[in-house]
Length: 377
Image (tube, rainbow, N blue to C red; front, side, top):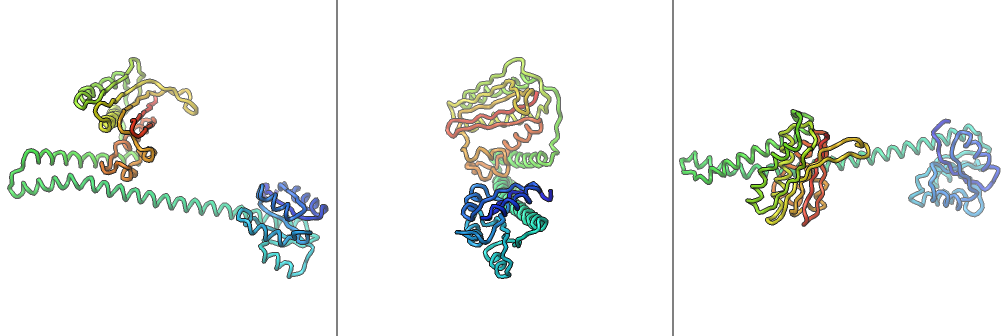
């Protein structure tokens, strides 16, 4: 076989010609459809476009030239290559065939080898053209994606600069007043300390994002008894709940499995989720942390996971924001971007991934959110 199977549509009002040409092509394992008129060829091509049409010129009703023009007039069919195959051998007939859109012209009586070579050439050319179009479209899509990423990074950088400018301004004012010998009130010093903490936090988060993206996030794994770890970690939130007027529940059963993990990193991931839940839950609302065991399915069948869910009755996340909450460069485009860059969820996702785990998010605006972490046992 010269080429992989191709789908060829033959159009000729002479049954003997159809049989002969079909036999030649089928011998080389081409898929062949044969029809006796241009109108039937158009109908067959509309139902299932072929890779190539072989078209006789002299046919009653719609001749080959008219059939070719009809193919070229339809957007879905106009790019199908057409080879004319005719007893007409006048140069003007060939010129007309190319003028109406034909790709090649074979004169009857034809040589089987000549036909096969011409067919192979047009089928291969068509396939190469389609592959080139796909590659060009992929390049266009990649270029658009690159532009989008660059725009997101620009927005993110602008937001980061904005977040740094405010605390740096506070520090500058306090330092300038001290330099000029003025009295700095205790309240201003506290503001300066908060500004330093905010700057350090932002820089630490940026560094952690960079390390996680480049695979350089340092991890110190050890055995962690999930029940005792979660009980100790969540205990202080009862005081916070009392102070903020938010109900807090921790459902941590006995006998949870032992996991392998970096305890400080897991602390940070879970604390971030619980802190967010409190931050966005109004007074009289509720925050609940549930722990349990979940068994994998599909490709994860047979695996066992420690499941930790943080559920709140807060404001929820807009549906348009939900797909991007773990993308650090999308933070500047979120509807609550005025609150700052907020890299916490992006870092949580990367900390969980470093434990070969998963994080899921469900939310409904006005009803609350549910973040679930799964860590392999």
